[in-house]
Structures are given as C-alpha cells and as structure tokens.
Amino acid sequence: MTRIDAVTLRQLRTLRAVVETGSLTAAAGDLGLSPPAVHGQLRALEDMMAAPLVIRGEHGAFLPTDEGRAVLEAEAQIAVALDACARRVAALQSGHVGAVSLGVVSTGKYFAPRLVAELRRALPEVEVTLRIGNRDAVIAWLTSRALDLAIMGRPPRAPAVTAEPIGPHPHVVIAPPDHPLARADPALPQDLLAETFLAREPGSGTRILMTRFLDRIGDGTPWRMVEMGTNETIKQAVIAGLGVALISQHTVTEELRSGRLVALRANGLPIQRNWFLIRREDMALSPAGQRVHDHVLALGGSFLPRL
Image 1 (cartoon, rainbow, N blue to C red):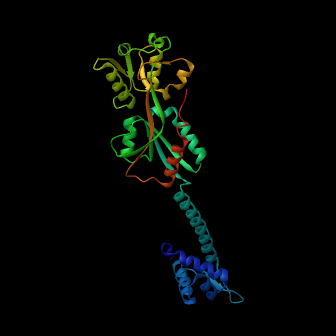
Image 2 (tube, rainbow, N blue to C red):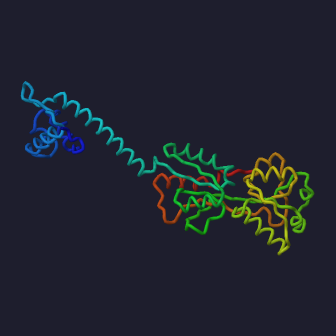
Image 3 (cartoon, one colour):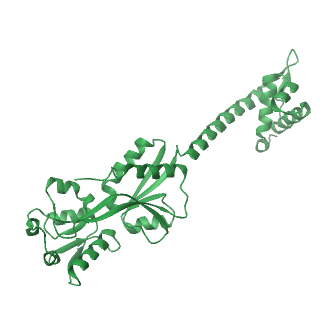
C-alpha cells in the first residue's frame, strides 16, 4: 500500500541522483551523503510506493523501472513547481508582483481610473484593485484593514494613519452660467448666504467644508441647504437652477470647461485643500504596496484633473 503523504523531497532527489549517475556511490557523492544513507533513502521510498523503482542494468548501473519512471516524472514536475514558487516568492518580496487594494472617496472617481491605468502601465505585474465609496465607507474599510492605501481629502482621526499630500484639491462654489452671481466680482457674503446650497450626506468631507465656509462668512447667519445623494445629482440640479453648491473642482472640470457651469468669484474662494495618500500606521505595506505608494507620490498629482 502506497504512503504518498510520507514521501520526502530528499527521497525523490535520491532516486533522481541514483538513476542519473547509475550507482549508489556516485549518487552519494552528488548528494553529500554516504552510500548506505543513499541506499536507505531509496529503500524507504520503494517501501512507501510499494513498488521497486530501480533495477540493475546489463552493466551493473541502476535503471528505473516503469514505476520508477512514473515517480521521476512527478519529481520533475515538483522541481519545476518549486522553481516557479521560488521565483514568485522573490518577485513578491521585491514588489514586482502582488495585489494592492486602493480605496478612493467618491469625489475621486473622476481621476481614480486614470491613476489606476497609470499604475498598471508602470507596474504591470502588480494587481491594483480600486474601491470607491463615500468618506464613511473608506474609513470603515481602513478600520477593517480591507485597504492597503486610500486617497481622500481629509485624513481620519481614527484609525491612526500616515497621510502624505499628493496634490492640490481646490473647492469652488458652482452655479449655472446665467445665475445673477455669475457676473459678480466678487459675490458678497450676504448674497451667497441668500442662496440654497445643495450638499452631500452628513459626514461627507465636502459638506463639512461647506458648513465651515458658510458659518465663517455668515458669522451665525442661517442658510438654506438641500441634501442630495451624489455629486452627479448635485451637478445636474445646479445646472437646472435648483441652487448652488460648494464642490470639489475635480468633479466639475468638464462642466466648467464647457461652460455648463461657472465657478463663482468670492473672497475665500476657491478653498484650497490637498488630496492625501493614506495608510494605517500599524500596517506595514507589502513590497508591492510600497511600490504603488512610492509611484503615486512620484507622480506629484499629475493624474488630477486640470482646467
């Protein structure tokens, strides 16, 4: 009865050496063993396979039996698999291959695909998985260690992260081109506060920035707000004349360029912030993750939309 689970690589290599050299003594020299040790390894392998694996040939050299040739074929496949494994491990350790999960807040969906495409061109053997969600979702992914890296505008307080700036992130107040304030230079605070502001859900980084801006210029003056679920909905609502919005310029680059929207001019606008590349302080990056991290920083924000 065969006991394949007990077979060792040393036994398989002993069989290979005996067949290739034709003798126990020569095989022992190649393997750095004594002839009795080689004989013992060979006998143990034959016992486990429950079959003779070598026979004496016409001139006294050891030759493989049919069963021995079957075992040698398996040994060759194992050697190829182990060699491929060693090369794979070396590549993983060097960062040339691997998988990296990159999370981006939903505002960044206007440049994230371009960034991932650049990473795939520069690091073709590294698989970069892109996950896009609102700020709360990205923070939850960081908390659960589901991300290697993240890109967002305002680093979270928890979990503890390392945040490095990767490029400018301007915010503007947008309006339709025929809006009365589109001709103001600058728009006065009281005129802005009289508008209805369209905003994202609570917890959104853009909404927090909008609230701080309006509270600062209004010094406690109440203002109107309508909540909407996505940046796309907000853009279409502003184009339709339902209100104005403080929004990331990177979400409206094409609309500003085409003239479907305008950025209002006012003191304190645009609000200049930064995009940050973020990773957990207590999670060491894999070599592949480190290569992605370094490449994103080296790009210097060249992947960000520009007017």
